[in-house]
Image 1: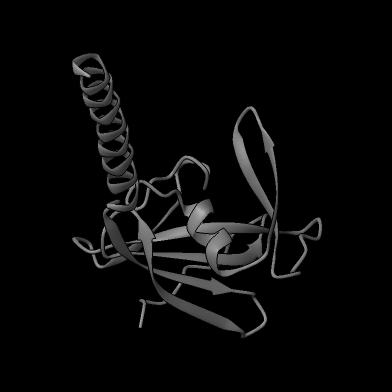
Image 2: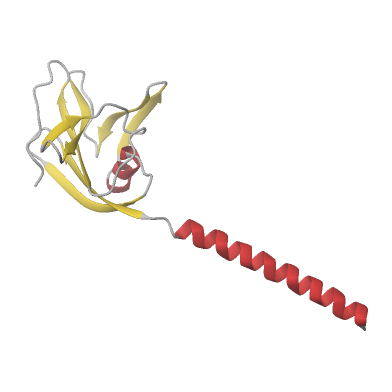
Length: 144
């Protein structure tokens, strides 16, 4: 009888430990901090869409864009290159370029890295524009 109780106690402890660690793992995965991002998409034809959304802390610009639109992109050694957003394809003379709003300068800055390498920050405003490749003549107006 003592042996049976000992086996029962060991098994109960193992099951409890399994559920404890499973619960903590799930808790950590679902407790991801969220950030707020303002994402604009300008199709170059007068149509502009703004998405004021939440994203997971650590999301890239590409991941946030994929959450709100259909994106066709190709990857290379230089990172992801967006070819189309919501069906707006890239002709030879135009390209999807992204900008970010610099709150200290109150001005737009063009993206210096690929959209798959740029990690978004909290309360950040980013903007996609379908613009002429050469020469780039467009600078977005301040965000709304």
